[in-house]
Every structure is written in structure tokens, then in C-alpha cells.
Image 1 (tube, rainbow, N blue to C red):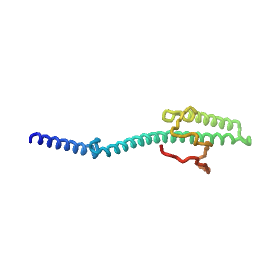
Image 2: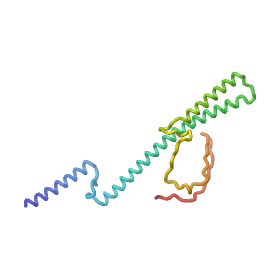
Image 3: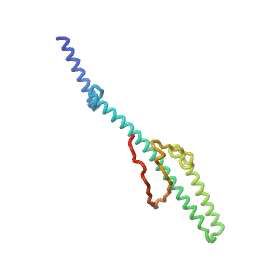
Length: 171
């Protein structure tokens, strides 16, 4: 009887410990012994969640870089518009020498501003001077054809068309 009482006491202690762990963690499955199939499924979900979290972090960082770069590009576009306006101001030769000098000084300032913007780092990367080496993974380059860069102003639009030569698949 003493041995069976110890066995019952051990089972009760084990059950109490398991219940305390479930209460503390708030999870029904804490170890494979709780539910082997459920533990494997839970582990798979945790791995997928970690991958999604990592991808979300990468997307957030890329979004920040794109946003800051777009801001710099908008400032460059404003400077170029200013330069164009000043350059055509004397088309008819009606400006005085001092007005031409003032326009030239403003153009020089705009060019210096553009140079500064081009050499600015975004999150530690120089993205506008041509030195950034962005890498894209998971893309089959043979399926990307006839890509042409297009630059549109803030109030411009353009209709684009293309042909899908292969459907996306999940690896």
C-alpha cells in the first residue's frame, strides 16, 4: 500500500506541476508529451510566425529607405524645376547682367543642393549616387523581360501593359 500511495502522490504532483505550467504560460501545449501532434503543429506555426516577422521587419526597413529616398528625389525634382525656370527666364535676352548673375547664383546653389542630396545616406546606405548594391533574391531573372524604368511626376499618370509568361508558384 505504501508503494501505491507514493505512485498516486507522484502522479498528483506531476499533474499539479503540469497544470501550474499551463496556468503560468497560458498555453495548453508546453511539451511534446502534452500533445505530440499538436506540439509539432504548434512548432510549425511558431517557425512560420518567425519567418513572417522577419519578412515584416525587412519590408519595414525597405519601406523606410524608399520613403526617405522618395523625399530626396522630390527635393531634387524641385531643384531641377527651379533650375529650368531660371534657365529659360532669359530666353529673350531681356534680363540685365545683375539679374543674370543672380539667376546663375541661384542655379549654382540648386546644383550644390542636388549634389548634397545625391551624396546623402539613407539608413547608412548611399542610394542616389549609384554606389548602392541592392540585391533581390527569389526572382528568376529569365522570367523578367523588357523592363523599362519610367519616371513620372507627382501629377502625371501613364498606362502600362504587359504579358504574364509564367504564373507565380509557392516553393
